[in-house]
Image 1 (cartoon, rainbow, N blue to C red):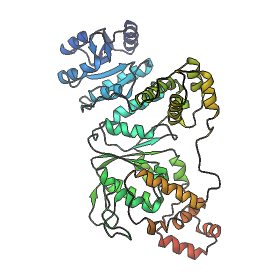
Image 2 (image 1 turned 45 degrees about the vertical axis):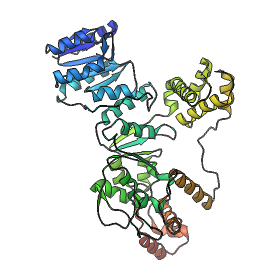
Image 3 (image 1 turned 180 degrees about the vertical axis):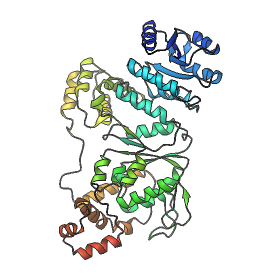
Image 4 (image 1 turned 120 degrees about the horizontal axis):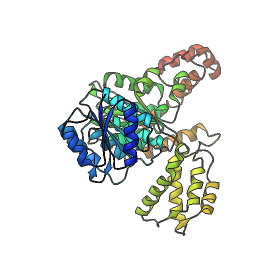
Length: 475
Protein backbone atom coordinates (compact mmCIF):
# COMPACT_ATOMS: atom_id res chain seq x y z
CA UNK A 1 0.00 0.00 0.00
CA UNK A 2 1.38 3.41 -1.01
CA UNK A 3 0.68 6.80 0.50
CA UNK A 4 -0.43 9.32 -2.11
CA UNK A 5 -0.49 13.08 -1.62
CA UNK A 6 -3.20 14.89 -3.60
CA UNK A 7 -3.23 18.68 -4.07
CA UNK A 8 -6.14 20.37 -5.85
CA UNK A 9 -8.14 23.48 -5.04
CA UNK A 10 -11.38 21.76 -6.09
CA UNK A 11 -12.87 19.85 -3.14
CA UNK A 12 -14.97 17.62 -5.42
CA UNK A 13 -11.90 16.48 -7.35
CA UNK A 14 -10.03 15.77 -4.10
CA UNK A 15 -12.95 13.65 -2.91
CA UNK A 16 -13.26 11.67 -6.13
CA UNK A 17 -9.51 11.02 -6.32
CA UNK A 18 -9.34 9.98 -2.66
CA UNK A 19 -12.19 7.50 -3.09
CA UNK A 20 -10.77 5.98 -6.31
CA UNK A 21 -7.24 5.62 -4.96
CA UNK A 22 -8.47 4.23 -1.63
CA UNK A 23 -10.47 1.57 -3.52
CA UNK A 24 -7.25 0.73 -5.38
CA UNK A 25 -5.59 -0.06 -2.04
CA UNK A 26 -3.68 3.16 -1.31
CA UNK A 27 -3.83 5.62 1.55
CA UNK A 28 -4.50 9.22 0.57
CA UNK A 29 -3.87 12.64 2.10
CA UNK A 30 -5.42 15.57 0.24
CA UNK A 31 -5.11 19.33 0.48
CA UNK A 32 -6.23 22.46 -1.33
CA UNK A 33 -2.94 24.41 -1.00
CA UNK A 34 0.61 24.14 -2.27
CA UNK A 35 1.94 25.15 1.14
CA UNK A 36 0.41 22.10 2.86
CA UNK A 37 1.64 19.80 0.11
CA UNK A 38 5.18 21.14 0.47
CA UNK A 39 5.01 20.67 4.25
CA UNK A 40 4.12 16.98 3.80
CA UNK A 41 6.87 16.48 1.24
CA UNK A 42 9.41 18.22 3.49
CA UNK A 43 8.36 15.96 6.38
CA UNK A 44 9.09 12.89 4.25
CA UNK A 45 5.48 11.84 3.76
CA UNK A 46 4.05 10.28 0.61
CA UNK A 47 5.25 7.83 -2.01
CA UNK A 48 3.69 9.76 -4.91
CA UNK A 49 2.31 13.27 -5.48
CA UNK A 50 -0.67 14.25 -7.65
CA UNK A 51 -0.93 18.01 -8.00
CA UNK A 52 -2.95 20.52 -9.98
CA UNK A 53 -1.19 23.39 -11.77
CA UNK A 54 -3.36 26.32 -10.65
CA UNK A 55 -3.48 26.52 -6.84
CA UNK A 56 -4.75 29.42 -4.67
CA UNK A 57 -1.29 30.04 -3.17
CA UNK A 58 0.91 29.43 -6.22
CA UNK A 59 1.58 27.25 -9.23
CA UNK A 60 1.98 23.51 -8.85
CA UNK A 61 4.54 23.65 -11.66
CA UNK A 62 6.70 26.06 -9.66
CA UNK A 63 6.71 23.59 -6.78
CA UNK A 64 8.08 20.73 -8.89
CA UNK A 65 11.78 21.77 -8.86
CA UNK A 66 11.69 22.19 -5.08
CA UNK A 67 10.21 18.71 -4.65
CA UNK A 68 12.76 17.23 -7.06
CA UNK A 69 15.60 18.85 -5.14
CA UNK A 70 14.28 17.86 -1.71
CA UNK A 71 13.25 14.30 -2.65
CA UNK A 72 14.61 13.25 -6.09
CA UNK A 73 12.97 9.83 -5.95
CA UNK A 74 9.42 11.06 -5.32
CA UNK A 75 7.24 10.53 -8.39
CA UNK A 76 4.92 13.42 -9.38
CA UNK A 77 1.86 13.42 -11.62
CA UNK A 78 0.66 16.83 -12.80
CA UNK A 79 -2.97 17.42 -13.77
CA UNK A 80 -4.34 20.58 -15.31
CA UNK A 81 -7.28 22.13 -17.12
CA UNK A 82 -4.77 24.40 -18.92
CA UNK A 83 -4.43 21.81 -21.63
CA UNK A 84 -1.75 23.21 -23.89
CA UNK A 85 1.52 21.90 -25.28
CA UNK A 86 3.44 24.34 -23.10
CA UNK A 87 1.83 22.96 -19.93
CA UNK A 88 2.74 19.39 -20.89
CA UNK A 89 6.31 20.37 -21.76
CA UNK A 90 6.80 22.35 -18.55
CA UNK A 91 5.48 19.50 -16.42
CA UNK A 92 7.80 16.98 -18.06
CA UNK A 93 10.89 19.15 -18.08
CA UNK A 94 10.45 20.17 -14.46
CA UNK A 95 10.53 16.55 -13.40
CA UNK A 96 6.96 15.24 -13.51
CA UNK A 97 6.52 11.54 -14.16
CA UNK A 98 3.54 12.32 -16.39
CA UNK A 99 1.00 14.96 -17.26
CA UNK A 100 -2.76 14.31 -17.16
CA UNK A 101 -5.17 16.80 -18.76
CA UNK A 102 -8.56 17.52 -17.17
CA UNK A 103 -11.12 16.12 -17.46
CA UNK A 104 -9.57 12.68 -17.04
CA UNK A 105 -10.76 9.10 -16.79
CA UNK A 106 -10.43 7.73 -13.25
CA UNK A 107 -9.38 4.32 -14.53
CA UNK A 108 -6.60 5.95 -16.53
CA UNK A 109 -5.42 7.86 -13.49
CA UNK A 110 -5.37 4.75 -11.27
CA UNK A 111 -3.43 2.89 -13.97
CA UNK A 112 -0.99 5.79 -14.26
CA UNK A 113 -0.46 5.79 -10.49
CA UNK A 114 0.32 2.07 -10.62
CA UNK A 115 2.90 2.60 -13.40
CA UNK A 116 4.48 5.51 -11.55
CA UNK A 117 4.84 3.55 -8.32
CA UNK A 118 6.50 0.64 -10.12
CA UNK A 119 8.78 2.88 -12.23
CA UNK A 120 12.46 3.27 -11.24
CA UNK A 121 13.15 6.50 -9.37
CA UNK A 122 15.35 9.34 -10.48
CA UNK A 123 13.93 9.81 -13.98
CA UNK A 124 12.69 13.03 -15.50
CA UNK A 125 14.17 15.63 -17.84
CA UNK A 126 15.43 18.84 -16.27
CA UNK A 127 16.37 21.06 -19.23
CA UNK A 128 14.81 24.50 -19.15
CA UNK A 129 12.39 25.59 -21.82
CA UNK A 130 11.85 29.13 -23.04
CA UNK A 131 8.49 30.78 -22.63
CA UNK A 132 6.68 31.69 -25.83
CA UNK A 133 3.81 34.14 -26.18
CA UNK A 134 2.18 32.04 -28.88
CA UNK A 135 2.03 28.27 -28.89
CA UNK A 136 3.05 26.24 -31.94
CA UNK A 137 0.01 23.99 -31.64
CA UNK A 138 -3.56 24.94 -30.76
CA UNK A 139 -6.35 22.74 -29.41
CA UNK A 140 -7.67 21.13 -26.24
CA UNK A 141 -9.47 18.15 -27.77
CA UNK A 142 -8.61 14.64 -26.48
CA UNK A 143 -6.81 13.93 -29.77
CA UNK A 144 -4.53 16.95 -29.32
CA UNK A 145 -3.98 16.21 -25.63
CA UNK A 146 -2.50 12.85 -26.58
CA UNK A 147 -0.22 14.60 -29.10
CA UNK A 148 0.96 16.99 -26.37
CA UNK A 149 1.73 14.15 -23.98
CA UNK A 150 3.74 12.25 -26.59
CA UNK A 151 5.67 15.37 -27.60
CA UNK A 152 6.47 16.19 -23.98
CA UNK A 153 7.99 12.73 -23.51
CA UNK A 154 10.11 13.13 -26.66
CA UNK A 155 11.54 16.58 -25.93
CA UNK A 156 14.59 15.30 -24.03
CA UNK A 157 15.45 12.56 -26.53
CA UNK A 158 17.04 12.25 -29.97
CA UNK A 159 14.68 9.50 -31.10
CA UNK A 160 13.73 9.51 -34.78
CA UNK A 161 10.10 10.56 -35.25
CA UNK A 162 7.72 9.85 -38.14
CA UNK A 163 4.75 12.22 -38.39
CA UNK A 164 1.70 11.04 -40.34
CA UNK A 165 -1.20 13.23 -41.33
CA UNK A 166 -3.22 14.66 -44.17
CA UNK A 167 -2.02 17.79 -45.94
CA UNK A 168 -2.69 20.88 -43.84
CA UNK A 169 -2.78 19.16 -40.43
CA UNK A 170 0.39 20.87 -39.18
CA UNK A 171 3.14 18.26 -39.59
CA UNK A 172 5.88 20.88 -39.84
CA UNK A 173 4.51 22.65 -36.74
CA UNK A 174 4.94 19.42 -34.78
CA UNK A 175 8.46 18.98 -36.13
CA UNK A 176 9.34 22.56 -35.16
CA UNK A 177 7.86 22.03 -31.69
CA UNK A 178 10.06 18.95 -31.20
CA UNK A 179 13.06 21.07 -32.14
CA UNK A 180 12.19 24.33 -30.37
CA UNK A 181 11.39 22.66 -27.05
CA UNK A 182 14.01 19.88 -27.29
CA UNK A 183 17.64 19.65 -26.27
CA UNK A 184 18.79 20.60 -29.80
CA UNK A 185 16.89 23.91 -29.81
CA UNK A 186 20.14 25.91 -29.94
CA UNK A 187 21.02 24.24 -33.24
CA UNK A 188 19.46 24.82 -36.67
CA UNK A 189 16.10 23.50 -37.83
CA UNK A 190 16.52 22.52 -41.50
CA UNK A 191 13.36 21.55 -43.42
CA UNK A 192 13.54 19.91 -46.83
CA UNK A 193 10.54 18.96 -48.94
CA UNK A 194 11.35 15.75 -50.80
CA UNK A 195 8.48 16.30 -53.24
CA UNK A 196 9.94 19.63 -54.41
CA UNK A 197 13.39 18.30 -55.38
CA UNK A 198 14.05 16.59 -58.76
CA UNK A 199 15.21 13.04 -58.06
CA UNK A 200 18.59 13.55 -59.77
CA UNK A 201 19.40 16.34 -57.31
CA UNK A 202 18.27 14.69 -54.07
CA UNK A 203 21.63 13.15 -53.09
CA UNK A 204 23.48 16.43 -53.69
CA UNK A 205 20.76 18.35 -51.85
CA UNK A 206 20.91 16.10 -48.79
CA UNK A 207 24.61 15.24 -48.63
CA UNK A 208 26.28 18.04 -50.60
CA UNK A 209 28.93 17.69 -53.30
CA UNK A 210 32.57 18.51 -53.91
CA UNK A 211 33.94 20.86 -56.52
CA UNK A 212 34.23 19.02 -59.84
CA UNK A 213 32.00 16.12 -58.70
CA UNK A 214 29.99 16.50 -61.92
CA UNK A 215 29.57 18.86 -64.83
CA UNK A 216 28.68 22.29 -63.51
CA UNK A 217 29.91 21.66 -59.93
CA UNK A 218 32.17 24.71 -59.85
CA UNK A 219 32.34 24.89 -56.07
CA UNK A 220 31.69 22.82 -52.98
CA UNK A 221 28.01 22.63 -51.98
CA UNK A 222 26.96 22.13 -48.35
CA UNK A 223 24.13 19.59 -48.09
CA UNK A 224 21.19 19.64 -45.70
CA UNK A 225 22.75 17.07 -43.33
CA UNK A 226 25.74 19.35 -42.89
CA UNK A 227 23.52 22.41 -42.47
CA UNK A 228 21.53 20.61 -39.75
CA UNK A 229 24.58 19.63 -37.67
CA UNK A 230 23.73 19.71 -33.92
CA UNK A 231 20.13 20.49 -34.85
CA UNK A 232 17.12 18.86 -36.51
CA UNK A 233 16.68 17.72 -40.12
CA UNK A 234 13.02 17.63 -41.12
CA UNK A 235 12.38 15.38 -44.14
CA UNK A 236 8.93 16.39 -45.29
CA UNK A 237 6.98 14.19 -47.74
CA UNK A 238 9.44 11.33 -47.23
CA UNK A 239 7.12 9.05 -49.22
CA UNK A 240 8.15 10.95 -52.38
CA UNK A 241 11.81 10.03 -51.99
CA UNK A 242 13.05 7.86 -54.92
CA UNK A 243 14.40 4.40 -54.21
CA UNK A 244 18.07 5.13 -54.93
CA UNK A 245 18.04 8.04 -52.47
CA UNK A 246 16.26 5.84 -49.91
CA UNK A 247 19.20 3.43 -50.07
CA UNK A 248 21.68 6.24 -49.38
CA UNK A 249 19.59 7.61 -46.51
CA UNK A 250 19.35 4.12 -44.99
CA UNK A 251 23.15 3.84 -44.93
CA UNK A 252 23.41 7.17 -43.13
CA UNK A 253 20.87 6.13 -40.49
CA UNK A 254 22.67 2.80 -40.01
CA UNK A 255 26.24 4.07 -39.88
CA UNK A 256 25.80 7.62 -38.62
CA UNK A 257 28.18 8.91 -41.31
CA UNK A 258 27.95 9.98 -44.94
CA UNK A 259 30.12 11.28 -47.77
CA UNK A 260 29.40 14.14 -50.12
CA UNK A 261 28.86 13.44 -53.81
CA UNK A 262 32.40 13.14 -55.19
CA UNK A 263 33.88 13.13 -51.69
CA UNK A 264 35.91 10.49 -49.85
CA UNK A 265 36.15 11.80 -46.30
CA UNK A 266 33.30 10.46 -44.09
CA UNK A 267 31.32 13.13 -42.26
CA UNK A 268 29.35 12.61 -39.05
CA UNK A 269 25.57 12.89 -39.38
CA UNK A 270 24.93 14.84 -36.19
CA UNK A 271 21.27 15.73 -36.71
CA UNK A 272 18.02 14.50 -35.22
CA UNK A 273 15.80 13.10 -37.97
CA UNK A 274 12.11 13.96 -38.05
CA UNK A 275 10.21 12.77 -41.13
CA UNK A 276 6.65 13.36 -42.28
CA UNK A 277 4.27 12.06 -44.94
CA UNK A 278 0.63 12.09 -45.96
CA UNK A 279 1.09 8.70 -47.64
CA UNK A 280 0.50 5.16 -46.31
CA UNK A 281 4.12 3.99 -46.07
CA UNK A 282 3.17 0.42 -45.15
CA UNK A 283 1.16 0.16 -48.36
CA UNK A 284 4.09 1.63 -50.29
CA UNK A 285 6.37 -1.01 -48.76
CA UNK A 286 3.99 -3.75 -49.93
CA UNK A 287 4.00 -2.22 -53.42
CA UNK A 288 7.79 -2.10 -53.54
CA UNK A 289 7.85 1.72 -53.61
CA UNK A 290 9.45 2.23 -50.19
CA UNK A 291 12.24 0.25 -48.57
CA UNK A 292 11.05 -1.86 -45.65
CA UNK A 293 14.34 -1.49 -43.76
CA UNK A 294 14.25 2.29 -44.12
CA UNK A 295 10.63 2.34 -42.97
CA UNK A 296 11.56 0.69 -39.68
CA UNK A 297 14.55 3.02 -39.24
CA UNK A 298 12.31 6.07 -39.61
CA UNK A 299 9.21 4.74 -37.85
CA UNK A 300 10.83 4.59 -34.39
CA UNK A 301 8.20 6.86 -32.83
CA UNK A 302 5.14 7.31 -35.07
CA UNK A 303 2.84 10.27 -34.43
CA UNK A 304 -0.47 10.52 -36.26
CA UNK A 305 -1.94 14.00 -36.48
CA UNK A 306 -5.74 14.05 -36.52
CA UNK A 307 -7.59 15.68 -39.38
CA UNK A 308 -9.48 18.84 -38.40
CA UNK A 309 -12.82 17.03 -38.87
CA UNK A 310 -11.68 14.60 -36.14
CA UNK A 311 -11.24 17.43 -33.63
CA UNK A 312 -14.02 19.83 -34.53
CA UNK A 313 -14.24 21.00 -30.90
CA UNK A 314 -10.91 22.82 -31.46
CA UNK A 315 -12.31 24.96 -34.30
CA UNK A 316 -13.57 27.84 -32.09
CA UNK A 317 -10.16 28.19 -30.41
CA UNK A 318 -8.32 27.90 -33.73
CA UNK A 319 -10.59 30.52 -35.29
CA UNK A 320 -9.99 32.98 -32.44
CA UNK A 321 -6.26 32.36 -32.72
CA UNK A 322 -6.20 33.08 -36.45
CA UNK A 323 -8.37 36.19 -36.00
CA UNK A 324 -5.87 37.54 -33.46
CA UNK A 325 -2.99 36.84 -35.85
CA UNK A 326 -4.79 38.75 -38.59
CA UNK A 327 -5.32 41.68 -36.25
CA UNK A 328 -1.62 41.69 -35.29
CA UNK A 329 -0.79 41.79 -39.01
CA UNK A 330 -2.84 44.96 -39.45
CA UNK A 331 -6.20 43.59 -40.57
CA UNK A 332 -9.43 44.81 -38.91
CA UNK A 333 -10.62 43.10 -35.74
CA UNK A 334 -13.38 40.54 -36.37
CA UNK A 335 -15.55 38.14 -34.44
CA UNK A 336 -17.92 35.35 -35.48
CA UNK A 337 -21.43 34.69 -34.26
CA UNK A 338 -22.13 31.41 -32.48
CA UNK A 339 -24.16 30.21 -35.48
CA UNK A 340 -21.19 30.89 -37.75
CA UNK A 341 -18.87 28.95 -35.44
CA UNK A 342 -21.26 25.99 -35.35
CA UNK A 343 -21.33 25.94 -39.16
CA UNK A 344 -17.54 25.86 -39.24
CA UNK A 345 -17.58 22.93 -36.83
CA UNK A 346 -19.95 21.01 -39.12
CA UNK A 347 -17.80 21.47 -42.24
CA UNK A 348 -15.55 18.59 -43.41
CA UNK A 349 -12.39 20.70 -44.00
CA UNK A 350 -10.62 18.70 -46.72
CA UNK A 351 -7.71 21.16 -46.45
CA UNK A 352 -7.62 20.85 -42.65
CA UNK A 353 -6.18 23.61 -40.42
CA UNK A 354 -4.49 25.35 -43.34
CA UNK A 355 -7.85 25.71 -45.08
CA UNK A 356 -9.44 27.14 -41.92
CA UNK A 357 -6.60 29.66 -41.57
CA UNK A 358 -7.00 30.78 -45.18
CA UNK A 359 -10.74 31.22 -44.67
CA UNK A 360 -10.19 33.37 -41.57
CA UNK A 361 -7.73 35.54 -43.51
CA UNK A 362 -10.33 36.10 -46.23
CA UNK A 363 -12.96 36.98 -43.66
CA UNK A 364 -10.64 39.52 -42.04
CA UNK A 365 -9.54 41.11 -45.31
CA UNK A 366 -12.61 41.11 -47.54
CA UNK A 367 -15.62 41.82 -45.29
CA UNK A 368 -16.37 45.21 -43.79
CA UNK A 369 -18.62 44.09 -40.93
CA UNK A 370 -17.03 43.58 -37.53
CA UNK A 371 -19.20 40.56 -36.73
CA UNK A 372 -19.27 37.74 -39.29
CA UNK A 373 -22.58 35.90 -39.42
CA UNK A 374 -23.86 32.59 -40.76
CA UNK A 375 -24.77 34.03 -44.17
CA UNK A 376 -21.15 34.97 -44.92
CA UNK A 377 -19.86 31.58 -43.78
CA UNK A 378 -22.42 29.75 -45.91
CA UNK A 379 -21.33 31.77 -48.93
CA UNK A 380 -17.64 31.09 -48.34
CA UNK A 381 -18.08 27.36 -47.71
CA UNK A 382 -20.31 26.96 -50.77
CA UNK A 383 -17.42 28.19 -52.90
CA UNK A 384 -14.83 25.99 -51.20
CA UNK A 385 -13.50 22.96 -53.12
CA UNK A 386 -14.78 19.61 -51.90
CA UNK A 387 -11.37 17.98 -52.30
CA UNK A 388 -7.82 19.23 -51.80
CA UNK A 389 -6.20 20.67 -54.91
CA UNK A 390 -4.78 18.05 -57.30
CA UNK A 391 -2.45 18.36 -60.31
CA UNK A 392 -4.39 19.26 -63.47
CA UNK A 393 -6.01 16.28 -65.20
CA UNK A 394 -4.10 15.19 -68.28
CA UNK A 395 -1.03 17.22 -67.30
CA UNK A 396 1.83 16.62 -69.74
CA UNK A 397 5.23 15.35 -68.67
CA UNK A 398 6.80 18.69 -69.59
CA UNK A 399 4.24 20.59 -67.49
CA UNK A 400 4.72 18.21 -64.58
CA UNK A 401 8.51 18.64 -64.62
CA UNK A 402 8.07 22.41 -64.91
CA UNK A 403 5.75 22.44 -61.89
CA UNK A 404 8.22 20.44 -59.77
CA UNK A 405 11.16 22.60 -60.88
CA UNK A 406 9.29 25.76 -59.91
CA UNK A 407 8.57 24.24 -56.50
CA UNK A 408 12.23 23.28 -56.19
CA UNK A 409 13.46 26.82 -56.89
CA UNK A 410 10.80 28.31 -54.60
CA UNK A 411 11.91 25.98 -51.80
CA UNK A 412 15.36 27.61 -51.89
CA UNK A 413 14.01 31.10 -51.35
CA UNK A 414 16.67 33.63 -52.28
CA UNK A 415 19.37 30.98 -52.62
CA UNK A 416 20.16 28.89 -55.68
CA UNK A 417 19.94 25.09 -55.97
CA UNK A 418 22.97 22.89 -56.52
CA UNK A 419 24.93 23.63 -59.74
CA UNK A 420 24.87 21.30 -62.73
CA UNK A 421 21.11 21.36 -63.06
CA UNK A 422 20.92 21.07 -66.87
CA UNK A 423 23.16 18.02 -67.34
CA UNK A 424 21.72 16.15 -64.40
CA UNK A 425 18.12 16.66 -65.45
CA UNK A 426 18.72 14.94 -68.80
CA UNK A 427 18.28 11.63 -66.99
CA UNK A 428 15.12 12.74 -65.21
CA UNK A 429 12.79 10.82 -67.51
CA UNK A 430 14.40 7.40 -67.98
CA UNK A 431 15.02 6.40 -64.38
CA UNK A 432 11.56 7.15 -62.96
CA UNK A 433 9.90 5.60 -66.01
CA UNK A 434 11.74 2.33 -65.46
CA UNK A 435 11.35 2.37 -61.67
CA UNK A 436 7.63 3.08 -61.71
CA UNK A 437 7.01 0.48 -64.41
CA UNK A 438 8.97 -2.15 -62.49
CA UNK A 439 7.07 -1.26 -59.31
CA UNK A 440 3.75 -1.53 -61.15
CA UNK A 441 4.71 -5.00 -62.45
CA UNK A 442 5.99 -5.93 -58.96
CA UNK A 443 9.53 -6.44 -60.25
CA UNK A 444 8.60 -8.72 -63.16
CA UNK A 445 11.12 -7.64 -65.82
CA UNK A 446 9.42 -9.56 -68.64
CA UNK A 447 6.09 -7.78 -68.02
CA UNK A 448 7.88 -4.45 -67.62
CA UNK A 449 9.74 -4.88 -70.91
CA UNK A 450 6.49 -5.67 -72.74
CA UNK A 451 4.76 -2.67 -71.19
CA UNK A 452 7.63 -0.37 -72.17
CA UNK A 453 8.00 -1.87 -75.64
CA UNK A 454 11.65 -2.78 -74.98
CA UNK A 455 13.66 -5.94 -75.51
CA UNK A 456 14.11 -7.76 -72.21
CA UNK A 457 17.91 -7.66 -72.57
CA UNK A 458 17.76 -3.93 -73.26
CA UNK A 459 15.76 -3.42 -70.08
CA UNK A 460 18.27 -5.46 -68.05
CA UNK A 461 21.12 -3.38 -69.47
CA UNK A 462 19.42 -0.12 -68.54
CA UNK A 463 18.66 -1.40 -65.02
CA UNK A 464 22.35 -2.16 -64.59
CA UNK A 465 23.54 1.12 -66.11
CA UNK A 466 21.23 3.21 -63.96
CA UNK A 467 21.89 1.06 -60.86
CA UNK A 468 18.16 0.61 -60.27
CA UNK A 469 17.23 -1.38 -57.17
CA UNK A 470 14.32 -3.78 -57.69
CA UNK A 471 12.52 -4.51 -54.43
CA UNK A 472 10.70 -7.81 -54.39
CA UNK A 473 7.10 -7.62 -53.17
CA UNK A 474 6.42 -8.65 -49.57
CA UNK A 475 4.24 -11.71 -49.26
